[in-house]
Length: 260
Image 1: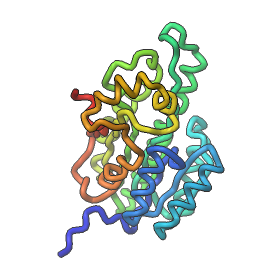
Image 2: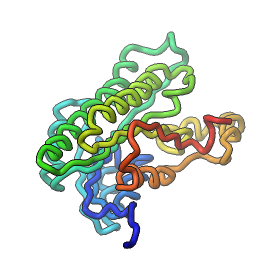
Image 3: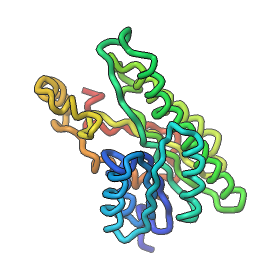
Image 4: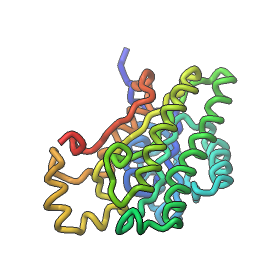
């Protein structure tokens, strides 16, 4: 028998914030390996461009404008995705924002609330509604699924001037572990991905800073910025049957930065 653990034919994957950056890198790999893909994003122009690139893989692609900081939009988004694609086997709660501050004491409450609303509330609602769908399938004899939360190295390392962002990412890891324990009986796995320094729109300011390139990136053992496509393999693994016994873990993708 041919061993094809990474063949995602017949599976449906949802990636929030899937119209660019790490999200699109993961969605592209999922589609390339045979999954039908749904992506959510708030920028409709980016949604449309991402959809065109994903359709090149010959899979079904569903795109929806969803603000994950709005509970009802998430609930409606899950229902609409299931109605359009028939099911959701894998959800990647990736949508997030990052706003720093000159210092912790200068961080405004409005900034804190905005970061929490997207990075924590949005992940909570996305995972909750996806879990509801997967558990219902399990009760009907169709068990299995994968929940993925995109956290950050900021969750496990000191992130000066980014306390709000770090707090949300630490919470994502705890939420994922709780889901892994609660839903393992339904063959639903839950895992977190922790990106390091990745070249996306969110890190544009750091990419443009000579001091950052001279002092931080040289500390990455692989000696470069990470790219969105560097997350494709992990996304496929966690969506595939190859990860059937992988749950409650934190997958660090940082080129070795956190150990150097």
